Length: 306
Length: 308
Image 1 (cartoon, rainbow over the protein chains, first blue to last red):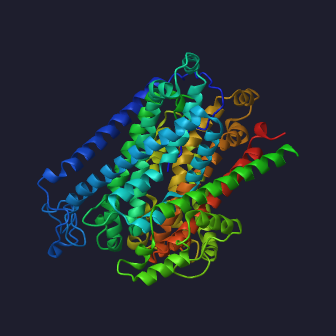
Image 2 (cartoon, each protein chain N blue to C red):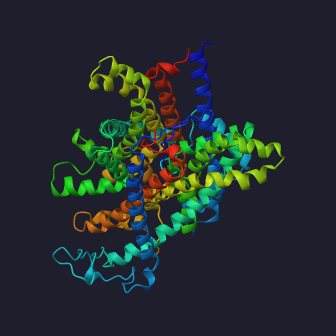
Image 3 (cartoon, rainbow over the protein chains, first blue to last red):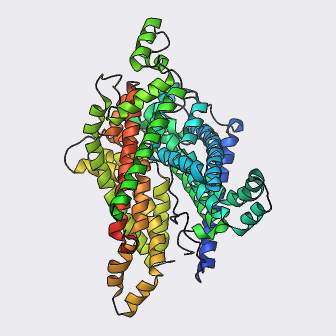
């Protein structure tokens, strides 16, 4: 769940904003962190994607003789298991890469699903208005009022935690965020001169929405999607921590974390390393989103442009 | 009717509709996800046991009958009976709410206060090292899974340094670590939103006017900026309620804190899905209530939008 930092009421007239003098330097700085985030996330994704072809151990190979080995920089660790092993002697580095693979694929699918649903609901509500808008907005509010984890638990408990269920559940916890923001933007677009002109030229609803509204929403949609990607990575971890994640042999960063929590005292790395992966992935995504937000839409900046 | 009463009235109305919609989402999701009897009883359950449970849960009736019954029970505060404990869900949830509320209140108060100070530092010294530092702290705080932070804190402060207890309830020291873990969310968002808000208030004419009348910078900040910039910050805390409650659930499990999180964990162990549904609805009510209070706070904070 994320909160956008934009609090303009929907109907507030847009005020022309004069950028302050230091905007250019700020933008460059922000851009720099955006590039850093993108580079880091890109490398992480690449490593996770090529994991099956890397010369690393099987992520599910048990070897109790090698159990709870620390990473190489601690005494007792060596380069045969660079990041140590877990309670069953499975290689941590290999598990982190394979775990990241499923985490990223699952979350990506969930983001796409949530974006499509949120976009449909948001456009219809914002552009059509009227009773449909009222109903859809109430539904969006209701969805946002339900805490993700409790709603997700009720579903996963009832149908079991397969990868497909996880994708659905994550998307369910996220679509309302897309819908709310898309609706706000669509209301703004509806009143713009070019849309009014198209309407008076008798261009149909679908024509306007597909060819004119949607392209204008795309940049914002991308920013929200990147942010939601990070949020869902955290959500997946929380759900897995409560033993409601995917089942072995499938693994995600969240399930690794959950499995290691009883070994915190003797082997901190089992818990700390997957958590760090989650933090770094989410952080780099947030950096990308911030940079993209400034580039695409300066009016929803975080103050540098206000 | 006077305008304030009307405002409260409409707000209560929309709040009620939100709760009913939320309950409806929970109800239909539970039905769409299929028959939970197999999940509860396991694969090898006898047909009689399944039929009996279906009858007990009312699953053998039509969905509309079930929905009508669900709503009419909801209207009188009946959230069903726990599968595992056999007593009304609401009696299990209410005693736990107080504990969770205490923990969350400490976390939100502490997190927002620190976030606001960071925001003030960033906004008044824009572009400086302080600004970068506060923005970076907010960015990192936003990216940390709260329960993982809880585990890391336990490792350092309870297991290694042995300064603080690793969980359970007792004196105030038991609150610190879980509150820090939960407080990261309000801290992150209050810093970000607060900075934006303070920067825009600082550019207002009345701040310039106050300065030109010779008020010191401290007076300007305390008297004008603090109050005027509080509205978006209060709003974001209201909207964050859901995220904060979600993180409270996982953090409570880490620290064995006897609130709704631990209850949710027990419900998972016991496959008590009616209890989980009831909890989702109760937390939705809490969300609506908090945002109702936030709305009323606007009136106090900003005389310009005070209802006349």
